[in-house]
Length: 298
Image 1 (cartoon, rainbow, N blue to C red):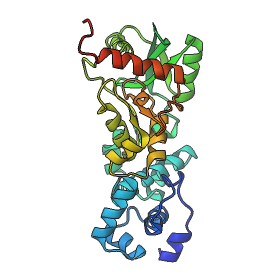
Image 2: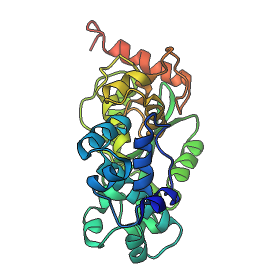
Image 3: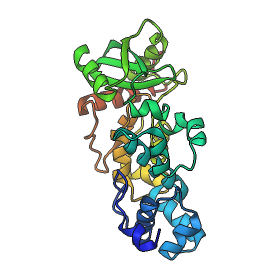
Image 4: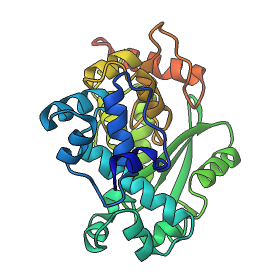
């Protein structure tokens, strides 16, 4: 592929994380998006934009929070998912997405798709998700999990509404009531809703981009009872201009409480943007602050 053809090629599904101030980094992203032969080398990308490989690696990582290779791998996964959703046969989709063979993809399919490519092509059909709902101070809490771990945590006012939301999130999965397996995990989530510090690590079965993973990890590292602005989180990731991308990563968090996205706020201190309502966000922060007090009765 020539540089001009790469620049003109349509981007694969998904826009760039944000408007990038450095046009060379944006050109690098477009080049990667249009590359048809797998993942381009760092040298190929650097030559295309007129930077040295070392300088490109540094500037690219500063701008997007991921390396050029991580970005290219992510885009290739997105291309594969789009082709599978459109009904392409698995083998053809693998090669069209830029995978030279199927073996390595199948070996790492849990990290890539959360399931095998054939299952993903069927919209997740065959996956089994158990759910339970429990009353709490914020209404009803729903916890859902696959055999690997928790995949969805939500607040609501009725069981029917919560189930409808779960089914919308996983439209082709087999969704069944829990028979007691989720009891311990749900009790742990409820303790955190009440402001208690975590007592155990909860297993998760969620899919995320490299940048989402970094944001979610940063959220879990915010001390209990404290909050951070989107800008502060972006700076902690070495990506100070990415506050909007941080906000999007918080908004797409499927496991509230376990990944405490309620600890993120706007630069002006506002709490808007919480999926389950500002009132619940305020209550969660207040409960965590009360639970973090040294004089709190145990």
